Length: 348
Image 1 (cartoon, helix red, strand yellow):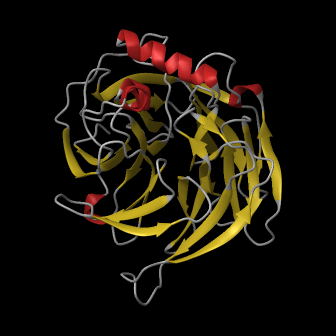
Image 2 (image 1 turned 60 degrees about the vertical axis):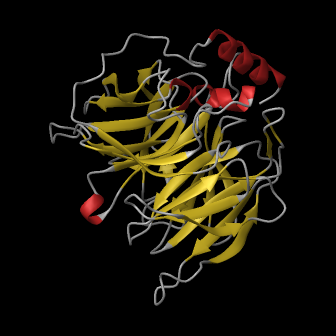
Image 3 (image 1 turned 90 degrees about the vertical axis):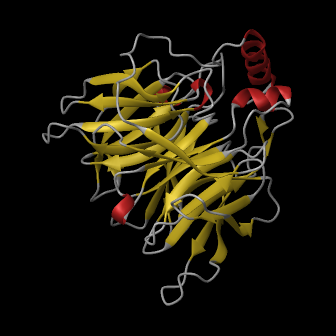
């Protein structure tokens, strides 16, 4: 993300336009009984980046404006407890659950003054909570440095394996990381993962599994995609499918579609549109896009970045992290702070 990004953001902010408005028609928002409540609001200028849910139901969130990770309750009112500040870096980015109550977190250097990344500054940490004392502070350890990678954001655990997948949003590559040996190899390198020369220089972003597929987004090209995945070999097993266009999703959460026949719902954070969108993907890969909450001029979900389902009695609720709105980072004027919000009544 170089000066081109800054110019494009400032230009869009100056005219009051959504910075990456959808380029293709979409269905109008569905009339639903959605209830959006703010679980916790951080100080203005706090960019919340990613989310994870602990088995207890509490929420973990990383911050892009500082190298920190917080824990919060799942119901308002709640407070945010600082769990850890990562040393020697400026930001905490992606977080993914691994085994039991262990999580992997990507960290690195990203400048908000220039909206630029520092290649080779990224690393992986583990965050482990004690099984016999879940309320105690976690044990944090450096898992690996990641030299040569440009902007490591998306991270997901390959189920029932020792592997993580890491999305390099700057280079447009998905890597496979072996948590036993620290080995790193290219899983997927394709132009559909790369950003173009125009607009926000963030290609592949969120990564999640559902059924026989790995789902992912390309924020710059406004794509939702998936690729067949072989869990036995932890390798790609077929060509990439484009499920939706015109949606600048960042991270997302997956849910079963309504037909019970293999369809999948992708609920995604359209950060620069201030909304949460849904792509309803049929079993044959046909996707239909709509917006379930928010709009470009709304602060209901101002600058959403990630979504995650609750657990237990909250399993039908979607939690959303947000930045307070991208325009604030360009103008210095924030209407709201970064928030953790809860959406109830999500259309399923």
